[in-house]
Image (cartoon, rainbow, N blue to C red; front, side):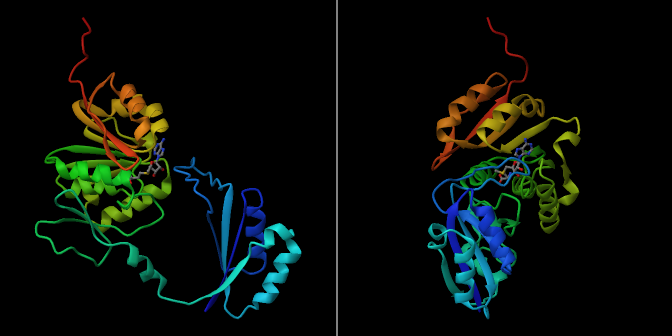
Length: 298
Ligand SMILES: C[S@@+](CC[C@H](N)C(=O)[O-])C[C@H]1O[C@@H](n2cnc3c(N)ncnc32)[C@H](O)[C@@H]1O
């Protein structure tokens, strides 16, 4: 048994409450959004909080809830501590608990993303083994799913692929499993590069995958570049992303809200013939083919 405390407070008070819980002997603290304020992609090294933030802390089950409650009342103002909830929490095999929400998922016709030890009952399946980790990219998010379905729909034989903003490496690994010859994965977050290496090894594609920080990318141009980042970053990175695609090659841009698709498409249309967006819910992905040679304007 554990004791679970949770308290919802403001962005400004949240660090204070977290420090208080830690000083009281919390074994862990978790901060989550108490409203509906998605933070899609914080800058590198930034951990922004939400206007209303819930801090949840776990304590040993033997702790006296009344003692914890009164410590909190003494340390925080009444308004804040009134929100306090304390409840016992049963121990369970936590490393298995998340599996309840993560099952094999099919993208397109043959590509499956499966947690370790789970396999679909499907003939001719291409299996990408992946457990959720610290880096973004399991396939549950529409921005990743749009790219995975696109990869499944094309012939990747002999293609070279760049996964720009690789997170878990899911897109590069999927491309290799689906037949791409070689891939390069890059991300400005070192944790993502490590996750990509681990996942590549699990899927036995590491010999065909180069993993590089963006400033160490080799001077190559790929047949396909996938970038699931965010609209603003894609627009900023347009010259670099364009330079990494071979003439006649394709670019797939994701992480774009439907209402941002036009702006992103416009930005890339000076070098790419852009297709209409493909969408899933509020998210859009764009495909473009790089002009083989400079277009001559009459
Ligand atoms: C939304 S995740 C996508 C992860 C994975 N490719 C997928 O499709 O699920 C975006 C990734 O891009 C990385 N990223 C964001 N801005 C970047 C930049 N300017 N250069 C390189 N990587 C960047 C982030 O660190 C993050 O891992």
